[in-house]
Each structure stands twice: as C-alpha cells, then as structure tokens.
Length: 171
Image 1: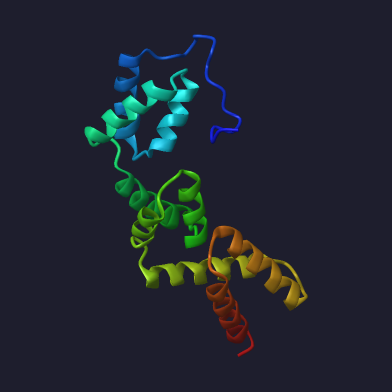
Image 2 (image 1 turned 180 degrees about the vertical axis):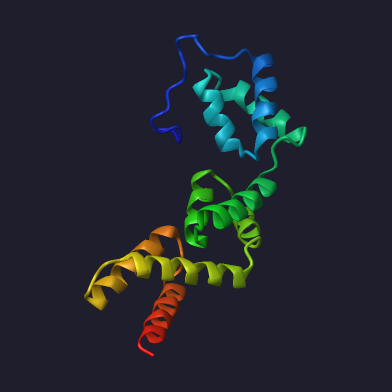
C-alpha cells in the first residue's frame, strides 16, 4: 500500500483541478502557511492530480520558494511547541510522518530554547498534577507521566519535573 493510506483521488471530476488552476490554488495554499511536499501531495491527490503532474507542480513550488522544507520544519517545531505545548518526541514523530528528513527535523527542533522547553514541561506537569484527582500518589504520578509522554516530552525530563513537584509539596 502506498503512503497515501486511506486517501483516494477525487474521481468524480467534481472539485478537481486543472494543472494551471492547481498551481494558482497551491501558491495561495502555501502563502497562507508553510507547507511541506507531503501535505501538497495529499491536497493534489484529493483533487485528482497525482504521479508525474503532482511531482512537476511540487518542483515548481519549490523552485519559486513557495515550499521550503527547512523553513517548514522550523516553523512547525516552533508552532507546535509554543501553541500546542508539544514535546520534542511528538514534534519529531509528526515531522517524520510528513516525510521530513532527520537532518531537517534536527534543524527544526533547534528552534526550541532549552530553558523555555523545560519551563513549559514544568508548567504542563504542575497543571496536570493539580487537575488529576487521585489520592494514591503512585497512580497520580503514573497518570501525569503518561499525559506528558503523550505530549512528547522525554522520560528523563518528566521524571525530574515530577520529582520536583512532589518534593515541593512535601515541604
């Protein structure tokens, strides 16, 4: 099975694009927000354009600087961290799913300030700790750890943050 997964091209002709119309629509799509080739391929496939025509359109968008994978990776990492409070692991996984190279993923993750990252982790841990109604400290720790791991934070940092929370509360 291809990387398209469940996506099937639009065969009805309804909402499909001509080659010329596609480039015009995609420039608007890319100007609104940074996009990666994977997202554009999905969009084109949905509009009934695939294979060689899609490849040519993507190459043209890259040539015209509407698409730049490094710029995309950096913007994606910054945005998902600042807005959604995702950790590095989640951001890495999402970028891999979008077929971004490991080198560009590293560049994207370099946009995240380590101090701001740890402060965000602490804030997320504190909020979740306060909102988790569990009398058993062990179970509470487990629930908060699971939540933070799902957000994509690293286990060693989570452990430090939670231990810090528990020691602060026992004083």
